[in-house]
Length: 316
Ligand code: UDP
Ligand code: MG
Image (cartoon, rainbow, N blue to C red; front, side, top):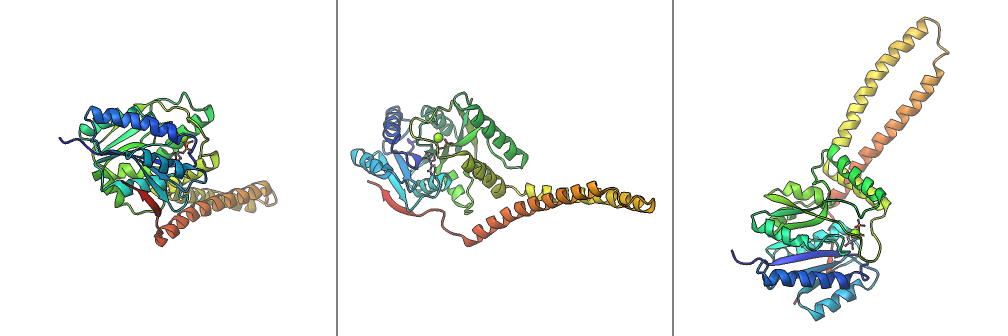
């Protein structure tokens, strides 16, 4: 087997504080892999600047000038982590044999790359990086994140538990992913749909090396809702079932009120009436909201807007 050209794709949004260190560690890692013959000598590290407002792009330009190992893709504006990652992967998919995507902040353990390359050499097209533990996460982050994976599962979205976007994908798997043209991106739910042989590699997730998280709670909740509504129609089914259930309850209520009427106790039951009006009103509003979410998604999908636009691609 000839040695494979590996491209490591790193989305970066306002990461000037960590990029030099990330680049240094990635350079060491890729050189070790090149020396051992695990990857070819024209492998690359590709930083995707997701419309950063700080000096991220000039840092990337500087790295590219110093060392042809580093490349940069600059998007026309900020499009969010998922779009930036997809932009990177789609831009390089024709040039390489295999890609690894990872965060810029060094939370993903660079040493897991060796294990990923081994599993790739063993014939896997996709290797998922899975967090073996969350010791370094705060209790809150751990609880919300694990709750998120459980909820996804309950909603029928196939995801790999505790896997984020640290993942190896072969060019073949990327070409498969390119066939998914949806604009509501939730890559960790889409990659399992691509199929092909896959495996997992466990790693310990570290703390962010520098800078701050670009995923505050609000964005995290949004991301979870995005994942569910773009990959599952279970919530709509739940509403239908709920509707049936409430209809059954209402039959009982009708019989009950008629009995009360004929026995002359009509004025009683005011409490139950008021309560049920509020309860059902609330349920209807929630249901409309959920359905609205899906209509919003359909609206965005029918527009078929581009998911990202590349402004510059710094190659050799
Ligand atoms: N990121 C991005 N665009 C955004 C937000 C984040 O490309 O709009 C990148 C960010 O630079 C990092 C990765 O996505 O490489 C994950 O973000 P972060 O580390 O802030 O998330 P957390 O680890 O806190 O969930
Ligand atoms: Mg992070």
